[in-house]
Length: 352
Image 1 (cartoon, rainbow, N blue to C red):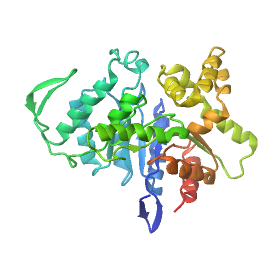
Image 2: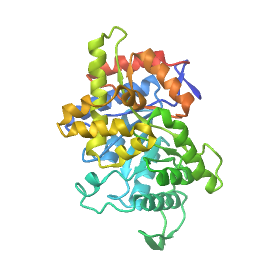
Image 3: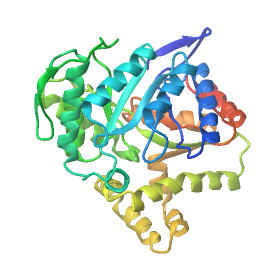
Image 4: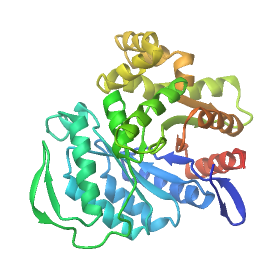
């Protein structure tokens, strides 16, 4: 594990945070303040989502202006609502303004967002992902853009009108299906799994490396950087507080299984949790509360981390041993002061 130093102190350099997705301006100001604290404490990266909330890259630009070293990840930009050329010029601009701190996360999102929000057909996500990565790479390398794909035919030979600060900017993909995971191993720098069970990190690594091998890349060319639902408890937390935190962590898991298309349910079922998934789907017939209650302890422990700072640090170390390269934990909820105290406690608990 790479170590870096901040004010003479060492800390684990690859642990990042996933910001929440607020829907009103006051909450965004809280996110900004929390990210400033994370930057000072030395967390490696902060990731923002979008769906139908705040526009992703405007928000990333806000964070560039108030941070000095933390990497800023797009988690994720969908591969439908913006062209690959627009994405390339956007991330190249932000990378310049941030002195090389941008990570581009790409993903298909889902039919709910692409069709229900953007009004676009949700089709062939694996092929579209390939074309987006290939075109973005060409543009960032400063090549003339001549490309023939299934979705994009570009013949004019335009080039980006400024030189990116990095000709090779890291691209991660939110892939779940075997074909997309293998393609990620072939083309990208990392995978951003959501709710991939910890019991199957080795299978995810095999799929990635199989894709890398097919194009002559060495094993471990693509890093595993999971979004991990997490909740930090105080060392004095009682059983009631612990159970409340577990219920809060189970809520988004139940939602993703039952209300975000079939992808998460299928992925978890493929990875040995079919009965657990079916229980949640049955729970949804009675509503959200029943769906949350149907999340089994085994499933929750496989995809989320709830505990004191020392318990979280121990679980993170276990997951890294099992194959995780860049754990991306949920930004603590609550006020800025509460989140800052929790982040400081977590940083102190991490093994040096």
